[in-house]
Length: 335
Image 1 (cartoon, rainbow, N blue to C red):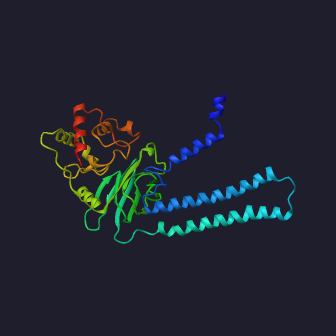
Image 2: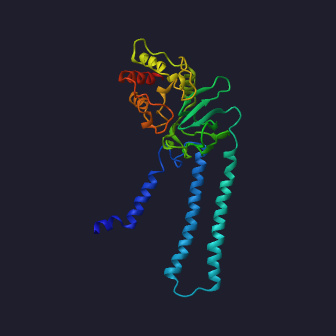
Image 3: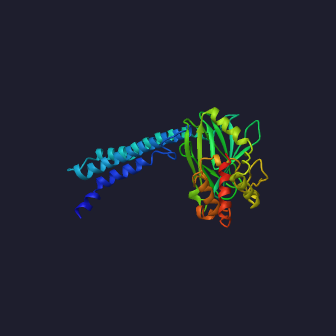
């Protein structure tokens, strides 16, 4: 029993709580480890708010401790008024006014669009995945799904929509969140400042698989990004003759997958589901739910609803194992 009391000591519990909170301040989905201009401003605001709250809390607790433990004689009217008005009214008001002024001064940065000529990317929320369409000024749109790549140091204009329910687009390490409302187009400016891989998510409950609606974001140097975008605009490469991937392509087309999915360069031209032209080269599968490998492709195709409950894609577990293996090999080859 004494050991248990030692473990439950308030000081130990407080230290563990601080460690857990500190562990949540880093990583690819942390707003306190910013990799973008907007996220940097939000992190600054968080620290200013924390400091302001700590100052008000500290003054309040100090006055309480003095009154409870150190006040041996009644204090005078002047002192009481000073404590109540100064510590309870003036100090909190000035502190909160300073924080409010700082936060209001930030609003223009978040509300103004990206400069004219900036890269435009359309992101459409579905249950439970993201359609991503690059809109270059001098070419055809380039579509992919569940992944965004951005050039470092350049402002980008995201144009956000939803085709079913309210979603909320949020990449904590790069910027603020923005709701995606059916029938409306909202806009969000991002300006990455550090290369790396970040993770985003839907921040508005949108149904059964809401927690499985992630999005992968890679920030690259300008030349690397341009090369990647050119590669994404190209049609899918044909699989080698006699290879498992070639058989998988035939399975893909014979079983109606092309009615929902597009693979540019083939007869598959569906627009209901994600574009799969270069799906094998993406950072993850099923909106950041699975790793990108053949086994994950096989599992998602055969056990779709098990991987992502209530997803609209039907499962194809009735296919023979050799067909599933070939289909997975084909999808993995689409790089």
